[in-house]
Picture 1 (cartoon, helix red, strand yellow):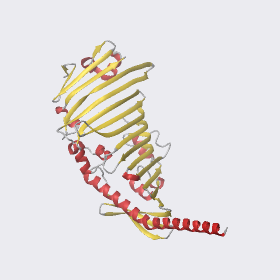
Picture 2 (cartoon, helix red, strand yellow):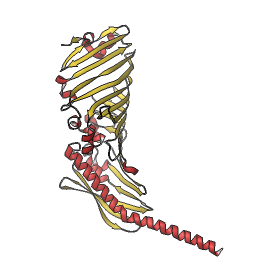
Picture 3 (cartoon, rainbow, N blue to C red):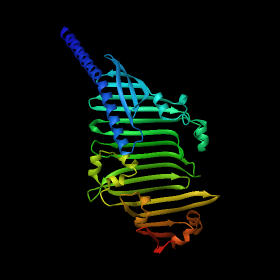
Picture 4 (cartoon, rainbow, N blue to C red):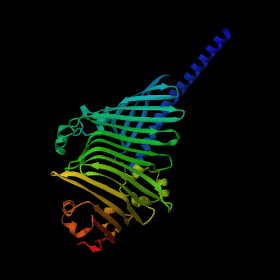
Length: 401
């Protein structure tokens, strides 16, 4: 019995020692990990700012103020360029077994980011939380914020929905085991100068040596310049290896609107895997760089191909049921040194468009007076074959003037 009690006491002492050792490791490493994470964020943003994909030159620093075995306190400090923003917010870090949990009220930063004309300072709030474990290394940071839009901002834009609920958003960054990174930005009740949406999510996933993938999802989108809206939009972006050894940007889209629903698959390329790897850029950075075709193109020409496009028009027009479909396939090539809309005079390619179940009158409402000149009826379908050659366009073999 004494031996059993001795073994039990020894096991408890060993477990306590192991646990205390794990907490001691967390106490020693938490500050270093937070400082390292700030340095990596600063370096990543500096590279984006230099490349022109980030308008802000923001530097982030962690300063430890005091610490103990179970917790420590410090500050996150934000600077813009060489000037101090005088923006810092306190951080409390709790040490666990080979892990730590940091929390902070970052409302001051949220108020710096959003102009008072959009979110009045007193109405903007934010919280930061960083959770990390060491075996395996997994670090997750999340900033949550909210605030009510100002009345003048909503009135100028003509928003009818924005004042019913506050803006709520969350930015999440995760450094997962084996070097994979996940970034997502979500927002509810988003009101911009172009339109508003009840929900928006932008996300990306990538490994250390790959550009990764990206996605966009939005719900209940209303454009201020249009009467119709989009109920749901889902887009997925991937860079895939092509047969020639380069990379092809593949975009898959599904959407539903007040006029119907549809899906599409577009491909663009070729892009150089070597140039992208050397620049160490991820897919979201490529998509937001207006000159990425010139920087990362693997050939003199970039080809944009529509592999599939199908849209079902299904709506009521002044009491009349409208129900027809449109299908499109084809491809266009343009100089890699220019954007596609900058090189209309150099476009080369072919596009095939077919409308099924549509009357001449309905097509005229959609296309206007040019419908009879560019479309030909073939039984139950209306068809046009568009060919571009050095900026000259023909429709079903006829040049449109």
